[in-house]
Amino acid sequence: MTALQNSTIPSPVKILRGLEDIIEQYDHFILDIWGVLHNGIQPFPHVIDCLETLKARSKQILLLSNTPSTGDTISDDLSYMGVTSAHYDHIVTAGDSARRDLETRRGQKCWYAGQFHEESLVGGLDMFFQTTPEGADFMINAIYGNNPDADGKLSTQMRVAADLGLDMICPNPDKVVQVGETLKLCPGTFAAIYEDEMGGKVLYHGKPHAPIYDAAWKALGSPDKSRILAIGDSLHTDIQGANGFEIDSVFNLVGIHKEEFRAEFGDTLSQDILTKYLARSAHKPDMVLEGLQF
Image 1 (cartoon, rainbow, N blue to C red):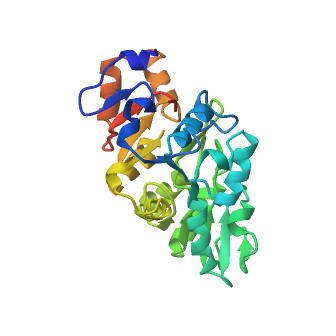
Image 2: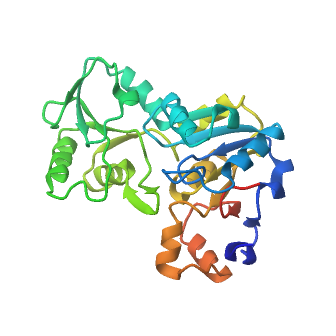
């Protein structure tokens, strides 16, 4: 038993030893991918066994991700890690949603901001891509990395885009992602700057925004929401999104927030520390789990 499982949190947040504790309460599981299933390099311990057990119990599993990649691409990536299509029923991604948006913009000029090129998102579109905002009709935010604006050029271009009134397509609202043991910035960080500091308009695709949850719910067959459980590692996206869609949620403490705990409190998680940490967020999970396991 871990330090977290030895601690307690005031009601109504419940500490789970594993999903076996609540398996009879839910028929449908919405799982984040990066931070719940894997760390960007390999699956977390017990994940594949847990998925196999859920499927053996006839539970429906939907993978819900803020990746800008489409579901087909993610399915291929997961298979290399040993998570195959036999382990889940559906994939819904922010990339799928953003692709549908981009399909309506054929023939337009796009400022593609960022070095990360996602072929499944933009490939085959009748669209003109450019490296500056001047003359563009809109922009795609594909900005990643630890310091993508080292020379200040990106900030200058974003201000120009905001002044021109360009819509920013944000195909990944995540602010950070964990790659192995390292946290890297994601498009959501720069979307917030564009919107909050520069006055630009952002069109978000993905969690915590309602449309992607509605798409997930329909993929599951529009079941009773009380029988759905969402599991994610981000309070800002996964837990906020589940709260807004009025479904139960589990906060997984193996993903991006793990380093925040370590940096401030070390490796030992006491009741007071965890309660204080959750009190900082307006987004409250119903349960807490330290790593996806049955």
